[in-house]
Image (cartoon, rainbow, N blue to C red; front, side, top):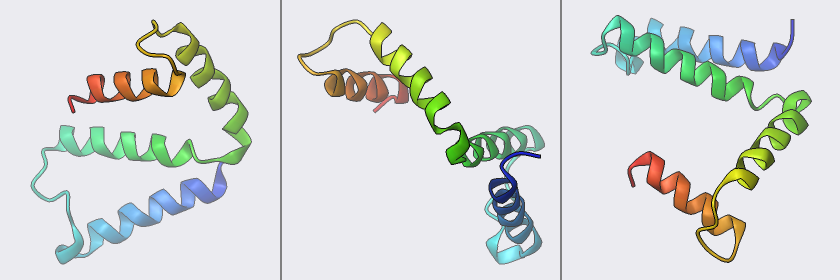
Length: 88
């Protein structure tokens, strides 16, 4: 099994949140909404596994290089596209 600590942390976070009525921030969500949020959260936590760092960095660099030029600096392109796709 990979990402043992990350799996443990996300499982414990959901267990604690769901087991305490005052802490359950998901209680008004539909089952589908909860499943989507849970999967996104798990994916984000698992992405913090440092054994995957260079794989993620390589993919990010490829995506960044494929972006059309929006400004003089690559960081400006990242900010532009991040805000564009997030609706900010």
